[in-house]
Image (cartoon, rainbow, N blue to C red; front, top):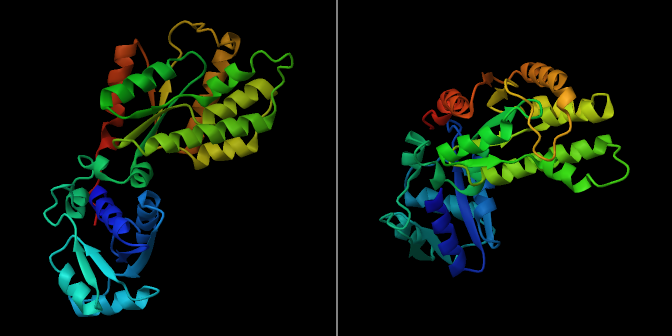
Length: 311
């Protein structure tokens, strides 16, 4: 969390190289290796995160011996936010730097986070937010209200939403004389869509709302090439979100300046529906005017905004 990161950054600024000892217990909900990756991602370049078993008594002597065993060389400085820090440092024969022991700079603790992750989600470092955020994807054929609902839902919840990369890509190539599409283009669109979602998830407040994913991209591949791409179909299953919101085509097709598949709307909606069911992810249909759809979506995502207590 941000308290850990403040400790790491303060220590890193005081030394040439900082080693962070991250403890691992088998009963913990979140694997230590994942937590190490998240912290390393947020840390300055002169930081190395090391994982060690949390299998010693809570006393300075055994932990000093463990640190000297794990570190590549004896430390010149130990950096902690704990009252026991000076004694630990003295046992290793090094100086000590005490950082924010009263938790005034970042009033957060691992205990508080584990007990109520939903309310403290933004206290996580960015990579942890991306990994732990719940994903909701808006799907449907062209002109079914996906973008409108995605942005409205994110705005209501105060979180991020992921625009449709494929639309930008289509606009970029629309003036070519040759309008033939190739399978690699759709795979790159799916890659870019996922990268954008992952990048924005680092800012999430607990929920990521996306307009489209590999599943819808697979249907557009069928629309423009006349056949399926097994790679995209596999990705649709592998990258299935926590929830699909399926927007029904219960209003007239609307031209927004980029659309061109009015005659394809029916079969594309059926294809999206079938593929969503095949992923095994929960699917909730939304329909009606925009405000009704928003209320239906809010009810559907409410369970995803609750997190179980962590160990």
